[in-house]
Image (cartoon, rainbow, N blue to C red; front, side, top):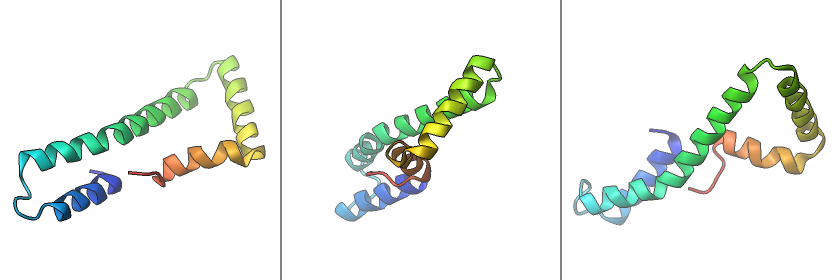
Length: 89
């Protein structure tokens, strides 16, 4: 479990303190976390693919993308926030 998973689970458990293992609560928790987990996995896998490949054209595109992110904070901020986990749960 990641930090956002734990925070969401705690919120879910605080909402219904009667039965912390109730199937409906756990299903709701899973549904709440699904989109964020998928986006995080997609971003991480994409970064691994981009940075582990040594093709010349991909290196050039990667360097261009990094230079653009370095010079345009509006591009950099969303990527950094997702990488740091600063997103809505």
